[in-house]
Length: 399
Image 1: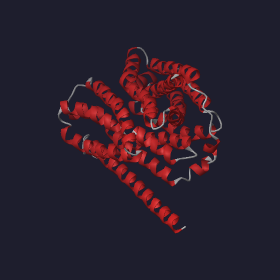
Image 2: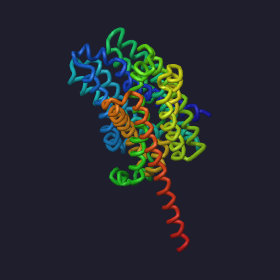
Image 3: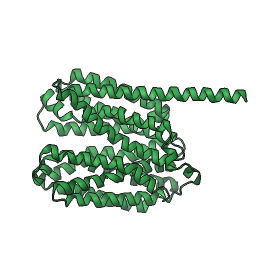
Image 4: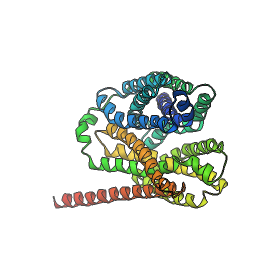
């Protein structure tokens, strides 16, 4: 009983870290106007701070995971959160475009490694067969950040100074540091899990296929989410302040979807759960095109899309961990890079039809195409697996 209670505390420590990461990743979007005005730059230039953070995630995930492969998970998570706390706090002290850009890049570096290592640790802390639920508890910090943390951080940044938003992130980082130090058990790395080197792990073709699935499939959500503000104001004709309500509805949906996705990963195989989620997302995004002019239905759909989008997170993370045996932390961290590549690519591709004058609603169509492409990749992976199983079975029978 005592061990179960301590494991729950350890999972809560991971959730606090996830809360801080979700806060810093998304609060910048709510204070772009304040940042641009304070630093004397344009809104598009301020948008570079979002891209710099995402680039940090992509670079840092495999790099830090590889460098820290010989450390215990507890020590690595603690060091990652020190990095996170220091550079997010320094972001609040930045005085110019270049310094803040550099700090945002450095702030993003521990993101992927923390979630990647944390996901593997969560499965070790969980009871047998409950690994998906444990991962969802860690990710719940990120989803709750969208409901509570980001609105609070945005309010503080708008009422006082954008720097206060980053000081808040630094404070959450300190809470995560303390909780990891006090509650995280000292999990030793199994020698059998270190047999595969980083280079061998990178030769795993199915791992790369799953990384592509994450990048393309989740890009469908980001294609919609990146343009949700103009969809609400320009298409549905709602006042600007409804954008904040919509963001909270999407965040609430993410909270629900996160735990629903964990349940799906237990009921089905992780990859089959991903196929179901992305298939539903494809249909919902197409439907969203036709109801977007109705403000009431659009707000309801905002919650639904938020929920569907996060039913993917835990199953795909489980699929990655199951596939990358011997290099689980590397694969799990790389998957976080893939999420951020999906963020960037989804936003870019969804912007193309808008740039050519086809209207905001076509961002949802791009999202549906990306989600469907993710389904196709997942089905292809299952077909290849099946063929390998048949081949091995025939070889065993012949022997």
